[in-house]
Length: 205
Ligand code: TZP
Ligand code: MG
Image (cartoon, rainbow, N blue to C red):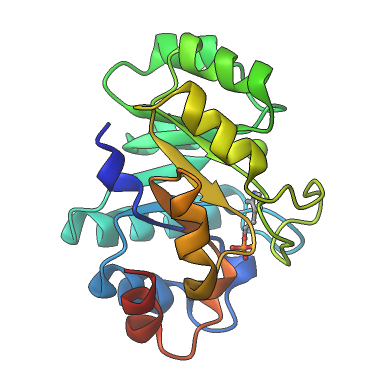
């Protein structure tokens, strides 16, 4: 994948939204996010038909704006929808299995250290997510904030590999994260909780 596609990576689930989720997504798309991930998890998350219906609506919006639609964790949902990609953590379906099923699709993997990074790169991931860089309110089981140290090391080891940084990132903190080597920033709350998404995305840019 092109590293530029990771520039402004918006992640959202209904649980993260203080108002109508599809309105938030459409405002973010209009404002210029470059990739979207549906991450429907946590207490009160949609399941079954309701999840399928919501996911289809998100996908349709992303198509309208020509923005890749990625599904978090749920490989069955991603396959059923023919999503543009899937993002998995270390505890989710094995990368090798997904890679077999998913030629020509985007696969992202969360990594936290050199071993995981090496396994992702050699196992066929298209990009990696590194974080949480800062403290986050959006992931209950998040590791401790790691800062930019490993991010910078990962970039030094893999000068060309697509890397997105995640966790507590705001427009004010973006420069530091890009300087450490990220191709882009992945955010939930900075956009979901923004009172002016157009303005927030512009600030990220
Ligand atoms: N993985 C590491 S931190 C995080 C995920 C999914 C949550 C990021 O959300 P926020 O609100 O941008 O900190
Ligand atoms: Mg996961």
